Length: 311
Length: 172
Image 1 (cartoon, rainbow over the protein chains, first blue to last red):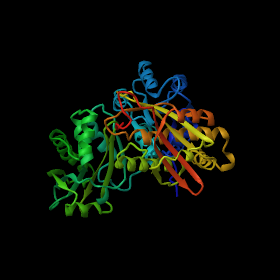
Image 2 (image 1 turned 180 degrees about the vertical axis):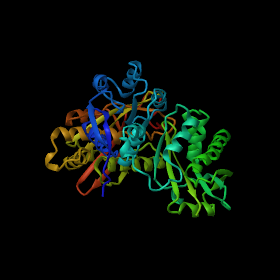
Image 3 (image 1 turned 90 degrees about the vertical axis):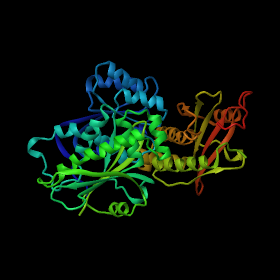
Image 4 (image 1 turned 30 degrees about the vertical axis):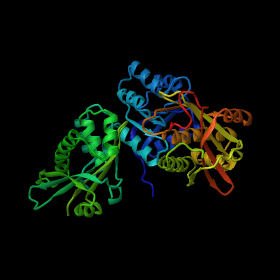
């Protein structure tokens, strides 16, 4: 059964820029799965055509290839910024992986860089994550749905917390992809939280080694090469670990938001544990009362983190 | 022996090609690296694309050829465009196979190892004469084959002829 799209007061506008009609078709399908309606999707065959289109269309999100004839994706973004579209949202779908070029894209404020081949779900998640706040602002006041169940950590709260740490560094969150014992890295950061009125551990947070490097590296404004090297070695440096610890502690605020009104959550302890730690395996198998996320920063890579309320 | 990769890289490339093919066609296909020089296998296919590459800081360059037969091309176009077999046009086949070359090439090119930055060009359709000319002026360094029954795809890494400064036995 498909959930009907949320009706917005005006259309969300997308511009897909790719010299391959086949990739245009794939991106178009992903946009249509974003869960909102109405949508207006226009296509451009290269950066030059896109710039012409943007002048009158003003899309909410531009999704572009990198390598195209005439004007490349990166040149198009640079031109966009020069034309005054400082905040126009742009995401890349590309095979380009050269770190120096990706860094240029990041410095031009792109929302995401998705590498081919990708899962359709990843593209849908990237699209949703890029336009969610705009879409919410377009939901008619009388149509705001009541949330039936509180999330352990809401995506919006986590996003806000990460933004505090990352500043203008673009990042992407994908929700609901569960962290499991099999996708855990050998070392992980485990946070234990207490809650007022609760005996023992109220909640538990887990960041895998990649997430430690990404969150810690992003907060410390580390170069992508440093972060990638730490991820490859499975060994965040002391600064990354310290920043990740700090972040884990601050997540208590997000857990408090979803707790009973009388409960305030605070961090009790954060420590690095092996993936063989028995309590970790047990909690990763918990169904419900959990929030799982994948986080990525273009040029860095991807990691996993999750929070669990103990039952 | 043809290949220049250490065995771990071959496994990585094969696995990435499998992921690429799933993305392109919606089908699972295992890719293997051929260890013997078998040029007779590399006959021009109806949808053959060639994509040049250069390695930053090296005098070496080369190309990646992707050879796709009609049945596979139809499968890729159907999957990517989300249309039925009857709706697929020749232009769709060329467009989809060009993108297939692009994605397969990335799978191969990114595995020269972390020390090498590889810049790839734009896929170009090659007719039999053009492909033969490109292939004969290069050395086939690694041939990856993905086969299901009679349907076979080849992804071939070509290296430019050896230079004085960089003997062909040096790892790329």
